[in-house]
Image (cartoon, rainbow, N blue to C red; front, side):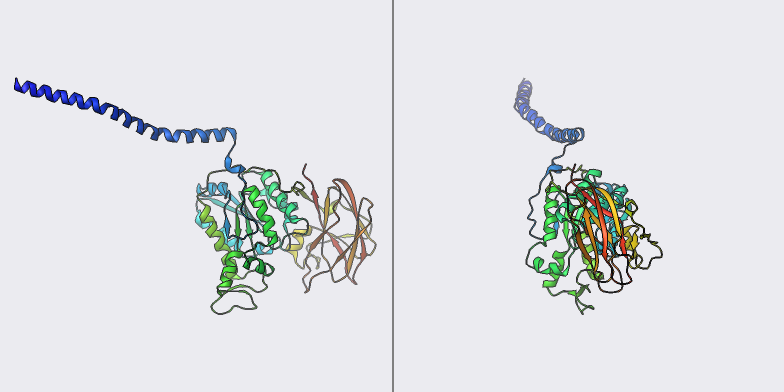
Length: 438
């Protein structure tokens, strides 16, 4: 009997314990459940983004101060590029710029690093840099030299060369061209340095062309890498010689001419890119970039080239043999990149006429000696005199110049040769055309 009482008491306390514990067990079950549910809203949100095509990242507008130089500003990063290289996809990397990018320097150093860092990806390089050219010419040739290759990443380098036509309209037009062709193409601005920028950068001010590019970078979420910040820092620490005919013992040797880096300078540039890429490589969720309201409503997205073969001339013009003509071949890569074929005349008074559509037309040429002159008239307007002088030295560098901007529409422009130095010819290559947005 005592045993039964003890047993009943034990059973009573057992039942009591169960009753007391039951709500706690239920609550424990409830606290565990959200852990498995917690990921579901994220999954649903991702599915909704894929369905609707919306992504808040694409519409972000950045307010980083464009007047202050910083070595690296990530903004929206390079998510599509990193997504592809990290998963072993085919990836095309393009380099658009001037001679600093064209040379065997930071460009191959960074491209080779990308190949080594992401060995499972298949990398293709597009070398689309042309010496002596700026962002206006880049915008006009982007379709042929760049976008036909459908790049995944485009480096844009124009703080040194700037441009002849309006730089702000040109850089924004270039960006919009790239994004219009493929909104998943990532863009990275890189800022090289010239001697004339040192005072600004040493005083914590962005050079004016860099400021223009930073305003566009803020609007379009483009990352920017400023090579000049590290250069100025090392210069202040007396660890770098910026410009000298030869290296100094114990210092990095940046350049001979104050703009085109030597080996040490290019390695500084490349290491700055590498450091910045490592900082943003985890930003690898694919993104369809937005096309925001433009900074400049009259930007140059609609830019193109017209071949010289479209021009009409009178009788004293001849077609240049680009393989044998000594002037054309003097700096053949740059000349051919700019002119892409040419006509020439050695007669004063000769004319050349081109029909075109847009607001601005540019001419490509090879100035010879001093005092070469032409006149340009659009739709019968008062002719504008253009004086062309070549640089010092034996190499003949191609250049380009513009007629005055006009109203939007169809136009006829005539060029007349009015003065030629003795024993020279006037060369004319392809035409640069800018139109306003549709």
